[in-house]
Length: 114
Length: 113
Image (tube, rainbow over all chains, first blue to last red; front, side, top):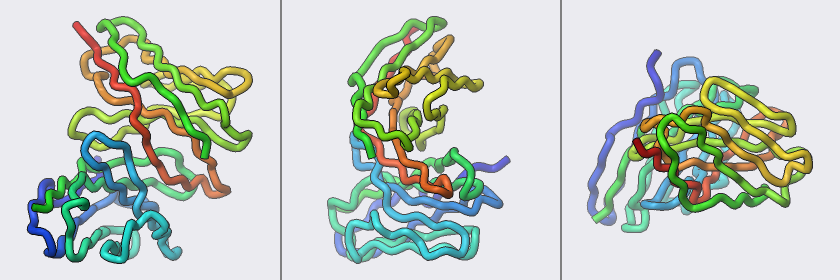
């Protein structure tokens, strides 16, 4: 079946511009995560959605970052007034349910802020 | 969450077993050991997890020491496609099994023909 998809695969933007990154989770998966991975570094948690519960935003680095999810489907991560330090690969993952262990990752969106 | 220590890199011959160590000496009783890997330019991929018993699935085996302070991921017959960065993580599973991954540097495994 189809895995997690993300778009665009690559995004180059100028400093100060806003960007929107999209994630389509595996159909039926109730949990959705956003992560950030800077070049050569490990994974940083950003935000977590589970069903209709309030999202866990504890990993968002600043108020320039926000995310939304429509029901149990697509999610959008928005970065306002982008800075060069926002350059990274943004990864989305989904999980079948609260009680499942495995997170399934998408291929990521590579964001470059010039 | 407990911190983990892994070797920076290791080489393995194709067809041989690859044994990847991980130290987690400060692990708590309710923390699980997870392994993920990340092949170049792809998203991370779940491999296996365990609490205290050894675990095996179609990808790998996980051996956890009796004191739970270290573990070893075993890829029984490494192939070139197993070349990746392997991450060992310990996480508390809250009552609902939700967890937030955070990776360190991991072990870069290179499988050579």
